[in-house]
Image (cartoon, rainbow, N blue to C red; front, top):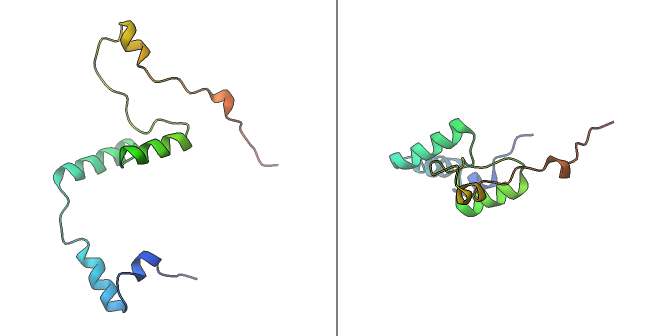
Length: 98
């Protein structure tokens, strides 16, 4: 059974009203910088969203949600201390169905 999404239903009282309201959502073009961010995140499989959203996804995942910072003196002690902690896979248990 296929049902319309509740967000779509809330766009209007009739099918025509919802259709028109939905089309209005796409009349404004996104800024080129937003398009770049969306495309970059999509092409590189990074999370797109606010810092808060990225943090929430990171805590629920075992992979990075954005690239590491680039540049700097990688040989210095300060730079090495700022590197990401490696993932400790021992705390994740592989569960295989029987």
